[in-house]
Image (cartoon, rainbow, N blue to C red):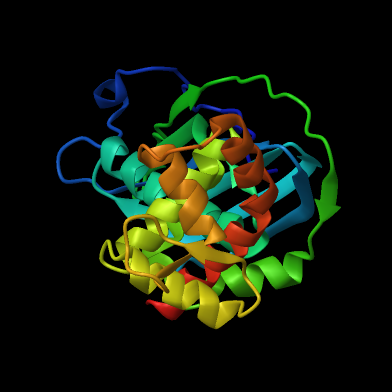
Length: 276
């Protein structure tokens, strides 16, 4: 099961923390293999899916097992085929796992927190005769409960996780980071900032994109600009919070941001997909 830490039967000598060199794990030029387990909490509405494995198409990685067992967390185990050191293995596993969680967060709109290692296990790829050295580390975490939970098909997820370079993937991590925000206002500002990054800090271009996606979006005259220079409601409330504007009630601005958050999430996803 992803996230579990196997035991060490027979003549294996398990240990936690350090001291790998005492067992010959990762010593000298000997390559090692292993597994690294992760747990990532899901904030807000959750998702469930059965355990399955997928090929991340990453050198040195055999496969990744992943599951969403209870709606409030995602557990995964990265199987490493051959790495030089335990440190290299942990770094490679974290890279692969982060990419997978970024894709899930983007494709399914989930707020998935940063994954934490829940343990790892390493052993030589070619152990010495009569000796099977193994290095084990365990970390335990207690997770909370989510509110609403939706079931996701493992077949669909496997296809998404094995897809080669989906459009806009370089910005999936930014989208996931925005979804981790502590408040709806923070998330709104973070998402709008992603749009500014994509459109080279030009609000006129951001608004042109928004109007192109939603011709019915509310627009108002932009202050201190020539008559007829308009801004969308998304840009207006962003600027009301970011700049001094006469007659603005920030409580009303924040409420409107919260009400418009769903629309901005969809717009940001679309912009990311259009800019690979």
